[in-house]
Amino acid sequence: MSKKIICLFDVDGTLTDPRQVIKSNMEKYLLETVKKEFDIAIVGGSDIEKIKEQLGGSNLFEKYNYVFAENGLVAFKHGNPLPSQNIQTAIGEESLKDVINFCLRYISELELPFKRGTFIEFRTGMLNISPVGRNCTKEERLFFYEYDLENQIRQKFILALKKEFPNLALTYSIGGQISFDVFPTGWNKTYCLRHIEGYDEIHFFGDKTMEGGNDYEIYESDLTIGHCVNGPEDTINQLNVLIEFTKQKPLQKTN
Ligand code: M1P
Image 1 (cartoon, rainbow, N blue to C red):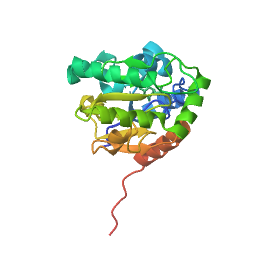
Image 2 (tube, helix red, strand yellow; image 1 turned 60 degrees about the vertical axis):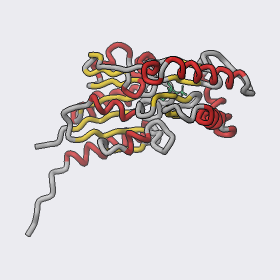
Image 3 (spheres, rainbow, N blue to C red; image 1 turned 180 degrees about the horizontal axis):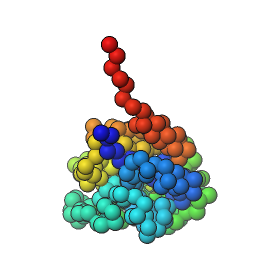
């Protein structure tokens, strides 16, 4: 009997360009080719509204068997919400306030070529911190990304947070271009795996699989078979290989 497989995809850099809408060839390929062979699911670091913008609005839930936003802290199976937890209960209001105040002070003293708005996005299971501000345009986003590569703005910010709060069990994770996520340790993308049941294999596809990236833990997890991709086209190539491989008949033993 053939194995029951589910393919679980990161969003930015795996199914789409960072924070962009999925291209029609990718969506067609997923829905018409991959879905014939395997179940499909997504796990993003972003909140559910951003994932809907990128992957197809309200009928998102018809396309994917599972949809996991915020690493799975916000989770849906066939469109039905699954149990969730929030960051304020996990770390406590006082500690959370201290972290937010520290970030606001740090950002206010940070010298950057420009700043925009929405520096802290408060989500269900995480804070998303953007030194430049989430309201920047696509061009400004790309500029900041290059500037950050040269100047390590986010890395230095994370080091300052770790130094200030050595006793808080928080993880700092860079998943995109202009921000980083802060969440209780353990609430990385492996969180979503507790919701997936009934498969022989879970194949995870992600681009930020190096240590410190937000796909690292789930890519390395014993519960998944990890595929490291370098963009949407590579995701398609690696899926083609997986489809071919699963179609091959098991080798016959010869005497
Ligand atoms: O999905 C990866 C990341 O996407 C966004 O990052 P950025 O805006 O910095 O490119 C955010 O939604 C972030 O939370 C998420 O991890």
